[in-house]
Length: 25
Image 1 (cartoon, rainbow, N blue to C red):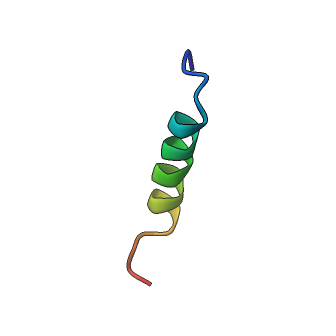
Image 2: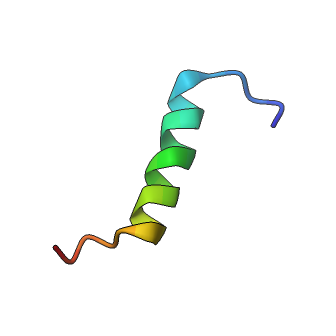
């Protein structure tokens, strides 16, 4: 990852969390 921005990291983590835990709960 060439992006060193916490915002991008948060986005990636958010996407991963959404993949693992879909917004169905």
